[in-house]
Amino acid sequence: MPSEKQSAIRELPFKPPFDWERLLRFFSGRSTAGVEAVENSVYLRAIEWHGDAGTLAVSRHPQDNALIALLEGKVSRHADALVAPLSRMFGLDADPQPIRRHLAADPWLAPLLKEAPGLRVPGAWSAFELIVRTIVGQQVSVKAATTIVGRLVERAGERIEHHAHAATSWRFPTPGALAVVDLTAIGMPGKRVAALQGFAHAVEIGDVPVDAPEVDLADRRKTLLALPGIGPWTVEYVAMRAWRDADAWPASDLVLMQAITSRDPALLKLAHQRARADAWRPWRAYVAMHLWNEIADRTGNNSDG
Image (cartoon, rainbow, N blue to C red; front, side):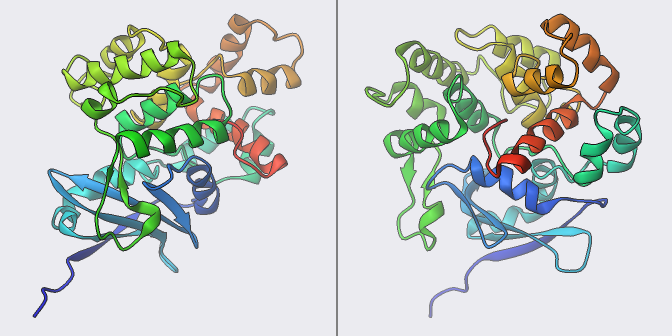
């Protein structure tokens, strides 16, 4: 007789309010084809943990203040260990009340908090994966970056044989595979390809500890920023999402700069905008999310962040 299918379910509690639909909208607009997907209000992806592979499905609990994580395959035996990283990925560690109290005192932000009181900062399953996407996304639209990352997966990733779910049937490229794959005509300028593969090589040989929580956050920032082709915007975006720095602030982001100048045309210089953003410490990452979300709500797409 065939063995029973391996699976495990864990509840991931959160403090309300919690805006699951906007969080899914963010993930959906940036999902890597073949690796992850959002379907019927469920987040899906192929995952691997300590050598065991499987599929992750995360949905909102119908009654309780919790998400439900369904793990299928051998990875399910790590269900307890995965509670913490999954909670970070979906921003469940946040307490929205002190964030709201601090930011709502600013007249610029009070209407945004009223419109989306449960907005969270989306995390990432893998810092390496997010940094790859962020490098690819430099100076291109979210849609274009998503397309190119999908091509990277097809060239350097690994197809999961006999996988039941087509939308999650690929493993994201490893640093070693991405560092050496031929990226001719991938859709990126040569300098960006070099930056991407230089980063992947640095991770492969252990020079850049992107997924190492034991390494000081300031050191991670410094090490990543030192790589060719990686600037402050990339580092701050990675810090807010992958490294969960609630005060990270991608100051040179065009949309954020426009959002500030639209509220005060005198704040044209980056230095003046940084000074204005100091009032939002230590929650500037949440302000970035609210400003990006304002545009997404208005336009109905994920063109920013």
